[in-house]
Length: 265
Length: 199
Image 1: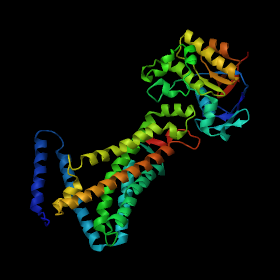
Image 2: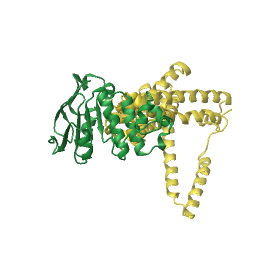
Image 3: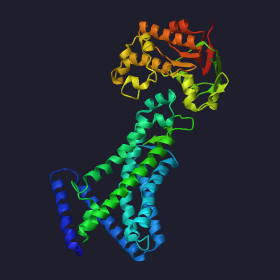
Image 4: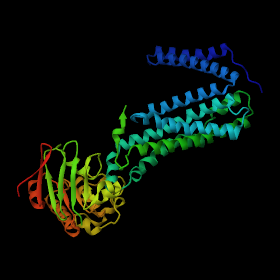
């Protein structure tokens, strides 16, 4: 099977469909035509630019270039985790927890996969490294952000219950145990659901892409399975790290609840 | 049983407080809302960052792990909070004799927390605190939501525990009658200081 290259005309046909939706929305006074057009234009520019950068990267095959791009992606993901919190930690902890847990969830798992599982030559081959990191970051970020947000929001709302437990002599880890459990659960639910639905309800994005690009479906399925397991492991380790670090930082060394370390958005 | 000694405990609302409550003694504290009574109790229970120290006999607060200290100084907040669905899940030993003396049925441990009234919660808060076998009592308006009959029962239970364990008690109360009934010494908060009232 070979890849059927898309022409500008092919893309324009799809674009005209979006334009029609915008036109319809404008005529019916639904009020989202402008946003729709801006988003469509943005996605065109962003994806073309990404295609161009990846093209340069694949050509160059340079480790410093790949490392720089990976670190850039990682730092943006760490920031995104922080930005999605309703109650976030003040100071360097706010960004630190996101960055550390994204590093664990994505960067280290990507390295493990490249060095032990896929073993491309050279090991940092950008065609494997960059999409892998992108998939891991994009998918684990949501789980970690949801888990951390759940932790800080519940700690804020249930602060009286936490203090009641501390007053009766429980340690900080006992006083927040239920809230921590719930935070981890909320972070892992999306990936558990998507594993359960994979192949039955939904055809996962990566597999679809590989099949369209001409891979045998069986190979595409194996890659999809690999990615899903990696995302699950990444989300699991990343959420554990984020929730543990976050809950520890909610208390000081005298087991006092320190909610002033959070700030509301 | 030990005495409770406050050594220059300072909160955002109070200048340094020095106070010795002997074993078996009850000191009652009152003062306007927002004058810093609860903050003082929180500082003694080491729930907030504070200057100064508290001691049970010779044991300083900072020399023992915070959870152990809090078990020993037994702090009852003005409003009680519950984290599990059933009342019984908040108790180690389900002492039915104790809850009966507080005017609650022995089956109360099977009840759902969400169905408790404010007064029931307050009485169960006292039972939960004593269930922990503290060496001192810090009570923040323990009978504020109770009618006369249940106030008398609660006072009797607290006094009986105090007599049995000879523990020092710091009791915040807005009621002048209650102050006269339970106090050995009475202090009021005035301009950031504890002022003792004549006996």
